[in-house]
Image (cartoon, rainbow, N blue to C red; front, side):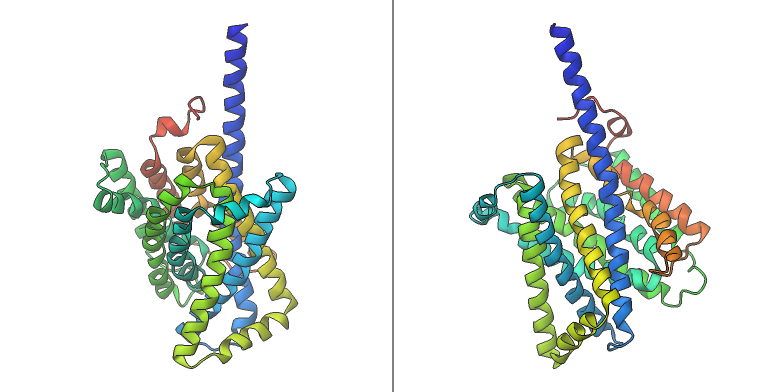
Length: 347
């Protein structure tokens, strides 16, 4: 009887781990998909908007704010209506002061990192921008050594080198027809540093609060409010408050733009909920390794969106090879290979 119970327990752990890995794959694809939909939404109205770097930033942050707000509401509704989470729990999480650290982390993330990512994807393409963004685990490991005094072994350093080599291979030359390739690469370089800082800041908050509650509340809705405030401040200081009413007018006059923004919000909600659910089911190590494979998923998703005439996409053989190197490097930075392929030690 004891043997049977142990065997059933082990089988259940494996099933949960496989379920968690599946969710992580879905979240990785959702991350790439929401980026592309956000770029497509901006593309629907950018031709009628001001064509400057500052204007592009305001447009990116403002549309991200709309999507984060809608995505946060969708995530909360999913947790309440589907998962049965009491709505009162969201009131309780507001009382956990340390969870508000996520707001500080989100201030660095979306208005800086995600906005730069959207602008970079529009200029150099999803695969190339995400090769750079894929350096986030490597940058996080380096900052962990410097700030948190964490020890790093040969495996991690090899992973950092492998990811860096992948980026160099991928960005060696632009694909045909891309004219703002290197400016897009430069914008993408902002992302891994900002995301790494976000990771370090948010570690404590996620340790003391339920991430499935705190994330929609602070990382999405709270971040959206901050993004709107940033747009108002930037436009007021530069004397361009009329940009905000113009953006709203362009969005509401374009049904396709509104559809793409809604799709962005839906895939954002999937990515956020999926990310933290995968951590719970298969552990942060395995989930992170899968979630950061998004660099590879940019390729089939990019071709699919191009086939549906949602977004233009092209990639070179060098870009594909570089993306593979980046993902291999990420896996080495995040965990030992033996940990990634074993499902029997999941907490």
